[in-house]
Each structure stands twice: as C-alpha cells, then as structure tokens.
Image (cartoon, rainbow, N blue to C red):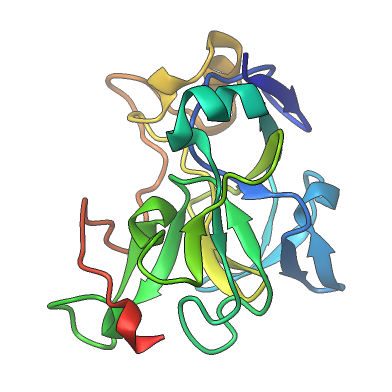
Length: 212
C-alpha cells in the first residue's frame, strides 16, 4: 500500500506519479536547500515570479513491492546534462509523471525559444542519460505547493510545482482533497480553479535526445 505522510496539509493520498525524490536541491535566498527540509513559509526562487513562499509540502512513499507489481510507479533518473548544459547539474530522480520544463530546441516542431512541460516518463529511455530506474527499494516523493503553479530548479533543472487542479483532485483521498480545496478554494466541479500553468503541456511531443 502506498503510504502518505504529510509535512503540512493533508493526511494521505492515493498513488499519483508526481514528486521529487529526497536530496533534490532547490534554490532559496539562503542558498541551496534540500526538498525534504522545506517547510511552509520558506521562500523558493521560481523561474517567472521571483521568490515565492511554500504553502504546503507533502510526501508519498511507494514501496518496492508496489513498484515491482506496477513498473509505471518506478522513478525516472535524469543524469547530468540530460536536458542541456547543467540541466541537471547532478542526478535528479523524479516520479514518472512529474513534468519538466523542456526548451523548444529539444522538441520537434516547436520554436527554439518556446518551452513545454513534459512528463519525465516521456523523456525516459530517450537516451542513456534519462531512464526509468528500477534498482532502488522504497521511493519517497516530495510535492511542493505554492499559491500558484510555479517552475523552479531542482538540481539546476526546471521542474514544476504540484498543481492541485480540478483534474487532479479526484486522485486524492478525501482528507487531502478537502485540505487543498479549503486552502486554495479549488472545487471538483463548478467554482474557482487553481491558476493554470503558464507553459503549454502537450499530451505528447517528440523529444530529441540526439541534441544532448
């Protein structure tokens, strides 16, 4: 069974493929800080909106047995330079569904100056520097939530924050769903939604690993 341990907000969540593995380093005004050490109120450097306070961080642990039974739960490991120079600066492990901000020059039929949010699973196996990692045991993921969807750097690679949208809420256990709805006024049907991402997130885009 997937175990959820909240740092702030929420009690438990059903299996979902988002989050950063422990030891991912984020930029803060006080220097690099590991994701597992973040707490609500801490400031993180974001790509488009400067310093933003963390509103919530929650974790989920996927057991080795769960990964063996469902390989789609295995994490994706991105080696140095998997996306580009210094992106990431060192190994970064993310859940398969966690989205990465990929520059247009790495994507087919997209202007070089554009960027898209691409799920890690769509990059995995594209080259020997991005792959599904099934060598570990239990895996704990950390999801960072801001007042709005943000892009921030983890180990130098731009990644997204958790997006508690109407589409995501049905995946959550009731307690987490209620906490997020209360915190952000997100409803499952009618009502205000969490602000949409600034960047496009196409369902699929041809990734060009030959440019690594």
